[in-house]
Amino acid sequence: VGAKKEGLMRRSGAEIGGWSGVVGVVLVAVVTAGCSGVSIDAARQLGLSGGAVAAEAKQAAIASDEEYLRARDAEALFHGLVGLSGSDKKLEEILRLLDSIHLELTKRGIVFERMTRLYEAFGDLAGFDAATATEAALNDLGGAIQDYAQQLNRTPPASKDATAVISKIGGLLASEIQKAKIKEASALIRGQVEAFARLLGDPLVREQMVGFRDLLGTDRKVALLAVWRAGVLDPKPLLDDLGSVGGLVGHKDAAQRIADDARLRNALGAVLDRRLAMRQELLEQGYDASVDALKRLGAEHEKLENEQPIDLARLRTMVGQLRAVVDLLGRSRRGGQ
Amino acid sequence: MSSIVADGKLEKAEALEALRLAAKTATESLLDALEKCDTDEQRRKIVRDRDEVLLAYLQSLSKSLVHTGGAFEQTARDLEATADEVAQKAKALKDAAEAIHLFADLVRLAASLALAFG
Image (cartoon, rainbow over all chains, first blue to last red; front, side, top):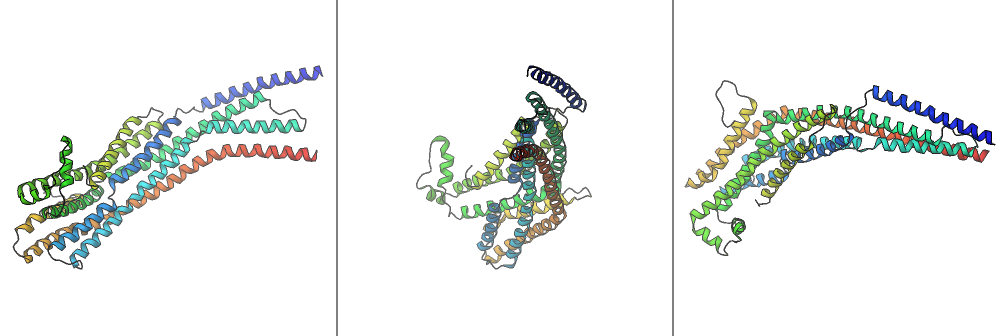
């Protein structure tokens, strides 16, 4: 029994020594094959930032249904003001064109949705902990083989120590495979993101998308000013807003006083005009910020592929700016400032 | 770009912008123009004139969208194909670990069978 034990111990020692050699060989192989410096964590963060850019850029670049429906109302109002009925041929033609253009431009939103899906897939690739999962799986397999051998009263093909070493190597290799896949995926995504940024930055495309929203905004603004001048809007919320900085609110008779004072009415009309004009400027800023964020995203992918540290802080700032523009656009749509 | 520059070349974007600015100006001056009119006929004429300018812009925009719409459709298709490719990479990575787990289960099953027959 003693001799058998001694033999087993000798075999285990030789086995561990053998596995150490294997570890060395594999590690050398991994290193000489070019151990990748691609950061899986950076890729994970880039995936999140890419998804955020796609979501914010869509809102900043595509006219909302609300913007378009209000412009339709405005067209009906302009014609109604001069007694041209709803069945007016010119009005019908204008509305038909507004409908078809809005539909066509809305369809472009699908590109941003596809981009979101692409970043979800990238996040999935980078978010999976291949090293830990493979190590655990190999440990599981090693344990199963050892149990199998014990149940059959056979010597396990590898000791527990050797199994642990195999698992470690497996995890290391899985991590390298994951890095290689991330690098390949990043290059593919970069090509798409750069192409999309070029498309959105094309002067004709920019004019189509920003210009149409500008026209919708002008329609809404002029319609609002028309009803303001007609004296049928309650000025109190606007006065409350102007007075809020000093803790004041509009007077209960403000509407009557404004109706009696043309100069005051025109002055408040100018405030409305400026507020709505600022929104138009935000549209352009939002669109350009989207294109810039896409370009920055492409540049960060290139850094990731070249194993350089990526600057996500700058990208996050750009996403934050985009979000701020979208929020301001949303707030001014709701009538606030 | 705020006006048509007479440099002998007029890009599509510039032409479209010029038409939009004309439609925008006509719309923005609509209320003042209507206030200056004395009769309904004059007011209708103002709205009709503005309609013509707006229609010129909308028709041109509608036509120009045909030229660039294909590029967006192609971009959407390319992004979808890339998303599928990246998703496939992620799946292959997970499948490798899954396959090892599956193999471990098979070994356990084999052990149970061996005991049953042993």
